[in-house]
Length: 261
Image: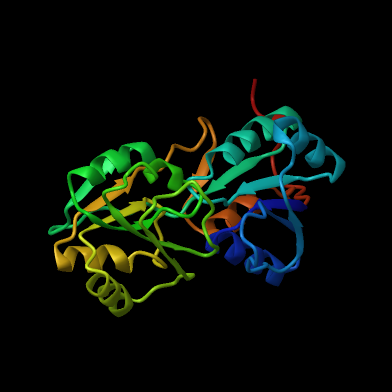
């Protein structure tokens, strides 16, 4: 089968590695191209957008794709909805690979919101020195908070608009608990802002915040498009692909025509 992985996440790379090792499928990973030096998975790789729903549907037809696995970031909502519409249009099976979200534990001081704009409003009442870990693309939502200081951590440098009082920390996970503890202490952070991305690579900041008594603003993830099946692991995605393969011929296997009327 020709499998298209909409990637850019750790889970997408793991799935590509798993399928590449099995060697039974042609695998193409699609990356958005928003990171300057992405970690490339094995197999074929394409970079850039598809040109909306119609462009993706045409690409699926032209490249004879048999299955699509949406393993994009949980907050990459636009591409997920385009994938749902495009695969439905060309009758190609679609699966969403989504790592489980985080859940608070005793001692956490979490404040939930559905948007970055909501997160900015919550920050006003929670702290003045903000550790902002929502990525470099949504900083405009915080640009008007001139009376707050921000530490922004991202893989690539952010582009304006962003807060006036800003320090950038260029880094890529996974992060350690000791490192996150030291970061909160060194910068005197009194509020953390994050998206509910899930996964272990960036989770230590939550533990460090709990230990330090630092409140956390958590942006809830958007839902998977209605009707799209989900799995939490690359292994689950590989197993789903196996269900799409034709069954070997079995002369004793009953077909619909053998069922009693």
